[in-house]
Image 1 (spheres, rainbow, N blue to C red):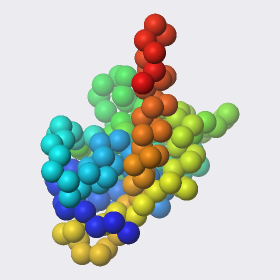
Image 2 (tube, rainbow, N blue to C red):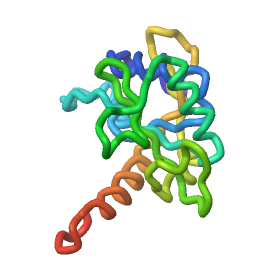
Image 3 (tube, rainbow, N blue to C red):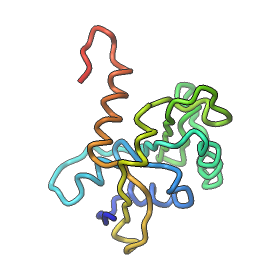
Length: 161
């Protein structure tokens, strides 16, 4: 288990994901914060919590987020995979499934999500003592997810990173 210094985003992510921590693995900016905790590095502030979720757990995770007061994004391009509360945004990804059902249908696909269960570390926020708060992707796995995502979103004329 890794214990990290709390930031507002880390505390909010821990609170919102409490109850479904075994169903999601945090990737993206929160995983970067965890990986760089304790280093003197400036990170651009963000309010997004990106998380990978198994296709069969998506309905349960979405119901939990909505029970916690998050609601679907009002932005049409994000509505199917983003839940918001005040300035906090939780965005979900899922692995490929040929016939996703319910909430999983609208989630973006990233094939690296199925690998997250083998490449994650339990993280606790220092303010909560040793109480585990969520799974976060390892640094190497976060990079693989980001690279796969960046390749999909780049125009064909731009080589992938």
